[in-house]
Amino acid sequence: MFPDRLINLAMLTLDDARQKRLKLVTAESCTGGLLAGLLTEISGSSDVFERGYVTYSNKAKQEILGVAGDVLADYGAVSEPVVRMMAEGALEASRANISVAITGIAGPGGGTPMKPVGTVHFACARENRAVLHEMHQFGEIGRQAVREASLEVALKLIGQQIA
Image (cartoon, rainbow, N blue to C red; front, side, top):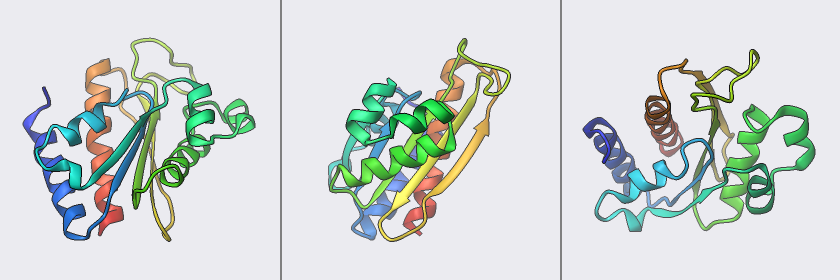
């Protein structure tokens, strides 16, 4: 279901978290739960993966993760302030130590001149640490490719918070 490179990266991420006794939570929009699916594809992930949220709509981001409606209105769902609030909200709503959040425009439609297709924001939060943020513009490489590239970025961000 997932390419070997992503399975291998997920296995390493889970192993690193397991060694440090850390639990993970995901908050996903444009990836629609694929990161949670990737992590749980690996046997034994239940001792590290705590839960995942798929908050595709703005209302879900507000209700489940506590993203403020005025932040959504001012910046849009695909923005740094929103993805940071998603990561912080997932951490607060779970029993995990590290959260990762993803929101973006996978395409093929939905892009604008300011936020073209392939724009994805990531945030990774860990208790008592600064929230990490990255924005990538993958371009119009296709919906599946944007989503797969997003999984790789998210796993690498988790790795930075585990270290």
